Length: 71
Image (cartoon, rainbow, N blue to C red):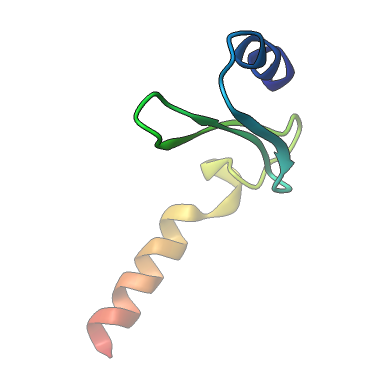
């Protein structure tokens, strides 16, 4: 998916960097007309690290909140 977006952006003369592999996502970076960098990211297929049902994200956040409150 990001390959097609990168190719279309390049064809339109838009500055593009990437595809960067961050392990759990792949990203490309585009520069908008105002000069800001915009990241487009796509999940890596079959990676479960971002699945909230499997990674206990809410539990991790709750434990962090409790630790901050008790500090």
